[in-house]
Each structure stands twice: as C-alpha cells, then as structure tokens.
Amino acid sequence: MQNFKIYAFADEAGPMIDDQIVAMKRNGLNGLEIRGVDNVNISDISEAKAKEVISKIENAGLSVWSIGSPIGKIDIEKDDFDAHIEKFKHTLEIANILKAKNMRIFSFFMPKDKPYENYRNEVIDRLGVLCELSKGSGVDLCHENEKGIYGDTAVRCNEILTALPQLKGVFDPANFIQCGEDTLAAWELLKDKIHYLHIKDALESGDVVPAGCGIGNIPVILKDYVSRGGSAATLEPHLAVFSGLNDLEREGEKSQVGAYHYPDNNTAFDAACKAFSDILKEI
Image (cartoon, rainbow, N blue to C red):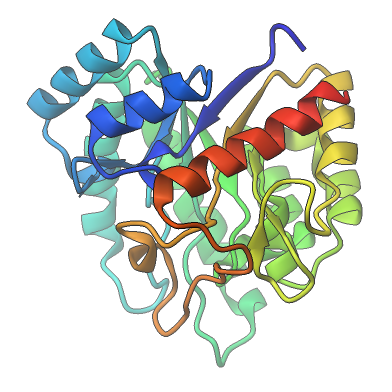
C-alpha cells in the first residue's frame, strides 16, 4: 500500500486553509479534495485566491487531487442551468490553477413527488454538455452517487456512466446506504467504472460513522479496488457538523451525522483518519 494516496475533505477539520494544512500534515495525508477555502466554496473563489491557496498547499508538500465541486447540485426543474454552466467554467479554471486532475460532480436534485425516470434524458444531456465543455481541460469529471440526485442508486449511476463513458465514477458507500442500497451489490455493478473512492461509512439508520464501523463493507470494497489497480481515496468524515454542511443537501433535508460524538471537528477528523489507516494496515 506504499503507493496508495490518501486525500481528504479537510474543510471538515476547519474552514481555513491554514488549519486544513495542519490537519492533513498531522495525519500524514497526501493532500486535498478541496471543497471549502477560508469559508468560501471552491467554486466561488477568485483566480487570485486559488493561486494563493496552491502556493500554501505545495509549500507544505501537499497537492490537490480533486475539486469537491457543487456542480450538478441544483434543482433540475427550478434552477438556472445556463448560470450553472458559467459557474462550471469558472470552476474548471480554478481546477487548473490548483493543478487538480479531477472534479467531482453530481446529477441534479430531483423533485420528490415525481418519478426520477422522467428526467433521465435531461440529466444525460446536461452532463453531456459539461463533459463537452471539459474537453481539453486536463480535468476528469467524476460523478458521485448522492441522495436526492438522479444518480442516487447504483442502477442509475450505471445508466449515467454507460451513456457517458468519458465520465468517471466516485463511489461513496455511506451515500448508497442512505439510499437503501447494498454497497457490495453496488460495487459489483459499478466497479469497472469507478475512478476513486470516498471513504464514508454509515449504519443501517443512515447515520455516518468511522470507516469500518458501519455496513458499508469498506474493507472488502477497498481491497478489491486496490487489486484492480486503484490507488487513491478521499476521506469524507462527516462525523461532526462542519461549516457549510447544510449547503450540501437537497432543500428540506438534514445530513445524518451524530452517531459518534466528538468534542470538536479536529478530533472528529483525526478519528476518521485513524479508522481508515487501521483498515489500510489490514489490506
């Protein structure tokens, strides 16, 4: 496992980039899937700010693996896709400044009272537009399964990734659990299309817990991922409420955190790092 790279959503340790760097160094991580910087979402920072951030990150011997963008987290019926495209273009520019080779995206929030299948073609078309715009950028778009979006189940993730082979997959076990999915069945269906893992575990209730403490089958999935040449994962602890968490959910929903209690975000972040490190030692 010497060549395996571990990244993290370090904004869960603290909102300020300086604090995130300290947390990553303290836990021996390789770098960031960058989402929040100095209390601003990564898609909203300026190019000048991005240059300042990458200088700090590289001076600390770290790197940016992926942009943890909010792209695709808009309501498919209510929100302005054209405006979202402009945000996407800006985020691509930020990704290049930060030297990130990946950007995680989503497949749009669905109305709660209508069949998701009604929106399949529109979802594929919109994601196709994003893929076309990303051509030549050097940034791979990676779709993450997430509750409330079209690609919340393994079957619908497979539809997306099959229709758009240029799009890669991010596999988040806890998100599948929260959608009532069996993670091993989901992995079996999607594993050929998965670029990297989000390390987040959950109980049957949906409450997020440290890796290996839930029903996400993370040790089994991780071992198979590595055997297939997988070399990177992003820790997404979700073990304590952190700045900006409420902004990540579909309207009216609340993140399921709190099954494990920690005195502060840094302690929760360190606990998540240790839990994953313990799993890696057994592989």
